[in-house]
Length: 353
Image 1: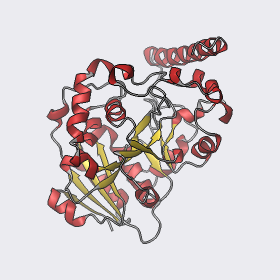
Image 2: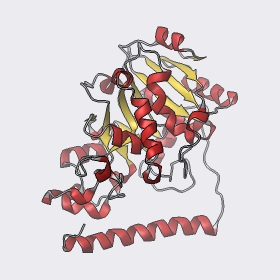
Image 3: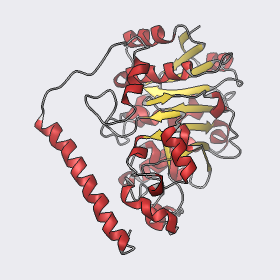
Image 4: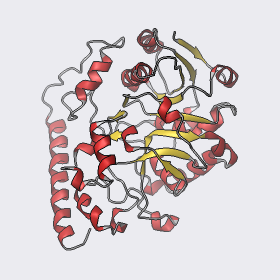
């Protein structure tokens, strides 16, 4: 049965069992519905006899919304401890689009959680869990700072450094050719994989030993003019060469559906097909979310199937009516994207990508 409490580190330490998954998430009022859907899907996917311990970094959630979370999870073996970090500590960092300063709270995990918790699963609110998180919980962290999945949207630090002939065909469809633009100055391997930070297993013990939080925030502030994708930039820079690969099906990014087929994939065929067709976690990446009116995502209805099992059963986004600026923004994105793909195809013919 669900328990949910405002928390202290002592309480979290006493209630968390290392045998069952400990999930860390961070959200504000804007993301309450998807947060609830994510937690409900994670709880519903547990195998019998398993328990889920959740630590929620509250970036500003109203009490009425917490009531909705309680109602949605009341019958599941879940307990939720709520911490309210000081957002002023990250107020100078970049935000844009749908991202608020709450996104940076995950970087404080090692300091805010008790020392007895040596690892956590971090989940963004815009994911849907399909498989038992215990399987991820039991994966070996070894000496890595984290386990994470290659970002299918931008799989390399700099795709221009990839010389493997079998990988050339993917380049027109990659979202960002170089997500860490200053990788040479930082001494990072440009041909290395780049990971998505929305699903991770964090090695908090190692973070504490090496004062990782300080390194991450120093990276963000020192390289502020190069930061792309917020916290993800710092994690990929600081953890370069020191993170372990999650099977890709544990973080299915929306961009997987942009590649024409597995032949154009930036990863091996089996991993790509498993990620696309048998996801363990569906991640509704990009700013076009399934809870927006008429966004594209082939698994949008899967999200609503789960939402209809929560306190927000039956909720659907209202039709905002025609708005020329919104229509133009989306049309412009489509046109620019198609132009980029075609231009890269041409460049690829002359080995310029």
